Image (tube, rainbow, N blue to C red):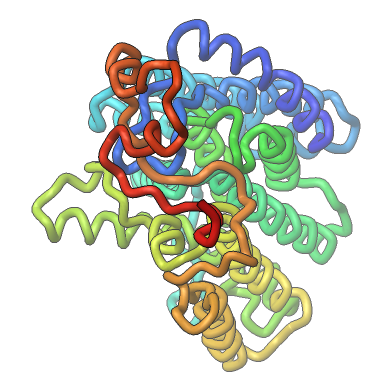
Length: 422
């Protein structure tokens, strides 16, 4: 399923790129952008194509089709319809621009489609010491499911700021969710395929198929079209894996009853931290929570001296450590007290990784000539380009003009290449 979704996405990206260029869906570089040249968006259209084909193929497979059919809701139809709705919303936003509240309405509508097809939270699993599992009536289930989906969509959308960042982080989150669902299925029923595993596999494939075109320097961006789509699919995998009776997994692990809550938190920790800090930062300044700025985690990594690719790889490491750390500890049965110790140590390691690169005695701000940054084109706002007539006026006339005269036409001093020679 993952390979089929990846292949379809990869092959569709060049076609989508031509389409985006033809309709002008490649806006000018903004002040808060990291890239320096206009780049086409709408890469999410290719990801949606890979998602649809992957889901349709999955529904035709023997074991996977049976697992999808046995689920409480029709996951295939729900994801195709909800994904199509969120893709259209993102497409219009990437092409024409859209008010934040109109976009929010589209996200709520897509989450409502999942609820309509019974892809929702039925109850919240809690340990017996906390009162046991809490069942949800239809209204409360609808509200909580929509909140989970909308928060996940916006968390992924907020983290989409560098080439390959959102696709890689969501791919890692999908892999951790897939591994967790496989582990639970084998422990509980002896099977391997569940609805969550199928959804996560297709999500992994769509992200992997898009990454070769999107890694720095990116040839195309997924835009809101893709960021909201993969956020929706990731949320649906979390919704389907969370409603698990704690009594069933009581003996799997010493903190097994907390797994349905810890895994989604670990999978989404990086996007959620970026989302929460962005909302707090903007509202404290009297701005809208949706007002764009240049204060995200990836911006800060670049501001302290990391290159584009290194910033992305550091955030990959964060996502991998948190997501697979929780899943790994759930499989080996570690004591509950060891869990916060591991988290503190992981945070310490990641903080050290995020420190600026020290280059010589001057630190990160004194780049060594022997250590060039080969990460591709430089980042940051492009310098203004004067019109062609003005460029021609600045150029000295051709003729018997010495190189030194041409160099000093603007009144700039000339430093000879060989000071000892005349």
